[in-house]
Length: 334
Ligand code: NAP
Ligand code: G4F
Image (cartoon, rainbow, N blue to C red; front, side):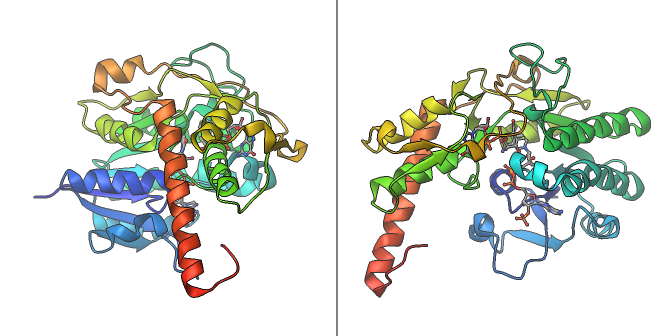
């Protein structure tokens, strides 16, 4: 019998990679999506017919319970969230509803429908915020610096609490930044790789960025979804940091991306003070030794390979779009 997995946030970056990974492992894959008036779900279009989608929302307890009752998964991966840090200052209450209380709603549904379901929570290195030690591991105290980070800290602790209170097989993966050609365009890696490609192809002249000195531990999303699955295959539930252990600045990211398209970044990148955050997470760097030792997990894609992969994908995508536009005589580029 095929194992069944249910993924919230299947239409997001990680959801799409995890769905592919689980299909390769012969899982029956189900996903939760929000109803949309437009034809969305671009990241999972290629999986049509292979996965089953269900409508539900993290805000709606009944809808979550109903889908879990219908699907009866053995494993549930809670990846859905309001995941963009700057938006969490614009919409702090909604971020709390989705990213914090949404976790409790999913856990409640599991507890009531089938407490044997194994649960993965998408926790974040953003919880370490103003870091108290470097590198950060599973024991490093949290000091979140954004409403998003605060909401994720709730999600982490409610996961630990349901494990301790009800004996659920609930794991929290504390994942450091992970990126890919499917990353949302507003996150800094993709903004830079897309921006460099557009400038190279003559569609834009400048790229506006905020804090170039911020440092992150950037890995590849395809590597990180494997760690999620590995956590749920252990004998007992636990929490794990997933990271590369290397950090780079936003400026290094910019240098690498522009170099890949043969341009000098200093001629194109401008500083926009509006993009600087009310409270910044200046540096993050993870210690994933526990995941290495207990799960056997290790990242496969390094920083340079990741950024080259993303730049090349953006150049190819935009070049193709230009050709399509030229062939139909369209004068604007989307
Ligand atoms: P993402 O691309 O922004 O995807 C978020 C997903 O959540 C989307 O499928 C979105 O659906 C869904 N969603 C949002 N609000 C929802 C709601 N109210 N009800 C149901 N679904 C909802 O994020 P990601 O990069 O894949 O990250 C996956 C998870 O890992 C998130 O929880 C994120 O906070 C966490 N995380 C990410 C990173 C990272 O570096 N990528 C690091 C640590 C933790 P729509 O398509 O309808 O918007
Ligand atoms: O790419 P970012 O927006 O990612 P951030 O804030 O680190 O959050 C991401 O990683 C978290 C894990 O630590 C996830 F939990 C979260 O869901 C998300 O996936 O920004 C990275 C850094 C920041 O320090 C920011 O200030 O880049 C700096 N930055 C500089 N200029 C910029 C820009 N960030 C964005 N988005 N846009 C800029 O123009």
